[in-house]
Structure formats: C-alpha cells, structure tokens
Length: 216
Image (cartoon, rainbow, N blue to C red; front, side):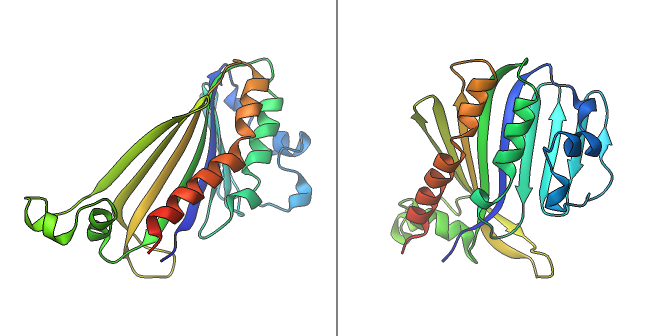
C-alpha cells in the first residue's frame, strides 16, 4: 500500500496585499518565476484589484488576495521538497516586507488507493469486524485529529472518497489532508519567512504520520 502526494501548498495570511501586481511581467522582472525555468502559462491569468491568479504548465499556481498569498503545486506522486513552492512564496513575501502578517499554513494533500476505503478507516482506527457487528456503525467516512506543536497546530484528516486520475477509471481512495498552521510570534515578514522555512519539517511530519497509518 502506498500514499501519493497530489497537492502541496503554502498559504500566508496578512493584510494589505495588492493582487493587481500579480502578472507575468512582474513575476519575471522580480525573478519570482525566472524565465530560465522555462515555465509556460496554463490558461489566461486573472488580474483584478481584489483577486489575481496565475497558473503554469509545470503544476504551480499563485493566488493573491488582499488578505493572503497562496502558492500551490498540484500533480501526482511528486516530492514537495523538489518543487518551487517554498522558493516562490519566500520571494513574494520578501517583495511585501511592509505588510502585517498573521499566520502561515503549510498544507499537503495525498491519496491512498483503497478499494474498500470505509473498511480501511474503520480497521485502522480500532473498529474490528466484531466491534462493527456489535454496533449500528455501517461505515466510517472521515477521521480528524490535531495536536499542538511549538507555535503551530497540526491538523490531519483522512476521508473516504473517489477520484479519476487522468486517463484512468474512477477509483476509491482515502484522501489525506494535512495542515500545519503556524501562528506568528512576530507579525512581520521575518516571522512569516521563519514559518515558511518549516516546510520541510511539516512534510516530514506528514510523511511519518501517513507511513504509520498505511503500515501493515
């Protein structure tokens, strides 16, 4: 049994961001997305005073609103630490050092292919077949848990669902959702950058938890 990463994101919450600055010329000029990377636009960017988004063919996308900056890499079975998510959002924060920052979310989504996803969740969390027979519980749709870390709260969820990988048939899965919510001690760019630099730590926590769950 394996778990596949499908989404990695960093979300920075703050005040006073200017979405209208997010365009391809700005990203190239400031080398937030350097031209040497060879990335091509995926679709037409949206640029407005309230919300702007731009997506690239390599799986990365950027969203800016007045209260947040978000960088996401979406794909199938990739290593989040080999993506440019952390580098891009660090550059965007560095270009906005005069803003007030409130929190940073380090987020990962993954999937566990599992034909009988409801049974998988029940068995992994202490519901043996005998226990199930002795209750009215028919299926377990989701499991949530969280724990407090130093200056951060770890939120984790497992959900029974379905997905259709590109070019494949629809299949049952267990969706893994992970959020490392870093509350900033310093409400400035330095505090935000320090939280962003915990990206590898958050991915390590995600990997260890998932490995323990899927272990036979």
